[in-house]
Structures are given as structure tokens and as C-alpha cells.
Length: 295
Ligand code: PMP
Image (cartoon, rainbow, N blue to C red; front, side, top):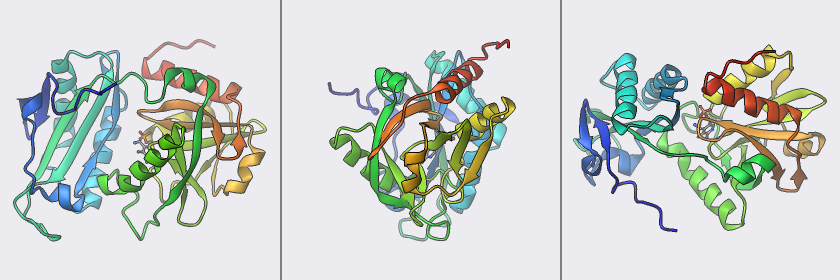
């Protein structure tokens, strides 16, 4: 099946303060971001007409830009409004929201302090990150050959385009080998994250997850940790070595796109989607859709 190209769709994209027809939201080939990865972005989901944790995402976009040494020429409230208005214009109740900020074409070269910062927001329909059937029984992951860099090697706290180079390479290799995604180690050899999601493990009723000291401290990750703790489940953030994976019974990954997705396999290790993964998957889904939960 040939996917519909992303530059040839109907709709509107918010770009630098105005709505432009989808196909006209273009940049020049000599754009700094394209050559030097001076680009930061967000990934958000729209549920029943509302963007989940919108302002948290917008704040992270601003923080990411700051970490890449450029300023977004709007306020957080203005970008929030741009996201909401784009979703409304697209007429979608459920979908994916992609704000992006990047250095423009005013200067070409590594140094570009005078380049203008551009911002765009696009919203589109995107039902499930992984195949829904696979999601229910757990997705299969393989090990990535690329490692998450140290915080003094790259601005690892930023959701920056440049950090995704090794994610695309890792995910392509995984998919070619028949897996849904790849699990990455960090520069120290500790379990880090999937190519677009954080990871959690379960042992004896407690949840273990890597300390986010060189990985994205995901908004979904923080939400799910709060949900678990509110239920009295112990959540331990610590260094996790790959050979420990044999000691865990359940595994799941989290992300705005991936939501809460059980994992059945990482390399040689097997997990069974169990009560904690499945109940957190449901609780997260209820929270995003504001389903009132009794009990
Ligand atoms: N790690 C990486 C590398 C990601 O791309 C994402 C998705 N943004 C996450 C973790 C999860 O972050 P969030 O829950 O904020 O979407």
C-alpha cells in the first residue's frame, strides 16, 4: 500500500502565524534546519476534540528550542491556541498534533545566529502507532545497534530532530528484521528507551524504569508513573542493565503516539502482558478521554 504523501493532502497548516493550505506549507532547500538539524518538535494526541497535556508539550517545545540556542517568537499561550485552532480547522476530534520550530534560510553555515525561527503546526488523523492487534498481545522489539548519547555529547533533554537520526536507523533495521521497534541502550550500556517511547518493567508488583538522565523524560512516562503511584504501586527509577531483563515479568512502553503499549519480546527476553500493563493501558486511555472512573 502506498501511503498518502504528507505534502499532498487536503487541509490547513498553521505556519508563522497564519493558516496556509496544506500543500503550500513549504520551506526552501537552503533552510538551516535541513542541513544542520536546527529543529525541535512535539508529538501530541487529540482525543475527543481536546489535546492531551497540550501546555506541557508546548512548554517542552520552548525548552527544546532554548537547548538548541534559538527562541520561539511566540508565547506558550499563542502556540497552544495555534494547536487548538489547527485541530478545529482540520475538523478532527481524534488525531495527532505536530508542532515544529526551526531555523530558516537567512544564513547558511554552521553558525546562523541571525536566522529567523519558524513555527508550524499540523494535525492529521493517526489511529494507532503500532498495529492494534499486536498492541493487544504485546509488540516485539529487537535491540538497536545505536546507543543514546551522553548528555555532554548531545542535548539529550531536547526533543530535537538531530537526536532522531539513530532512531530512524534503529527502527528501519528492526522493521526489516520483522520487529515493531527497537530498544536502545545508552552510552553506558544501560537500557534506555525505544525509538519513540519510554520503557517500563514489572517485577513482584513493582515498576522499574530507567532514570531519565540521557533520554526523553516523556510526558506519558510522567503521567503513567503518577497513575501507578496513585494506586499505591511502587515505581523505581534506576539504572537497568540488559541482563536484568530476564527477571521481569511484564514490560510496556509509553509515548504520546504509542500511548501505553505492552511488549512481548525484547531480543532474547519474553514478557507476558499482565495485570499492571493492561490496567495502566486502560487507565491511561480513560484519562485521555476523560472517562470518569469509579472504584
Ligand atoms: N522517547 C523518545 C525518543 C520519543 O520520541 C518519545 C515521544 N515523544 C518519548 C520517549 C515519549 O515521550 P512523550 O511521552 O512525551 O510522548
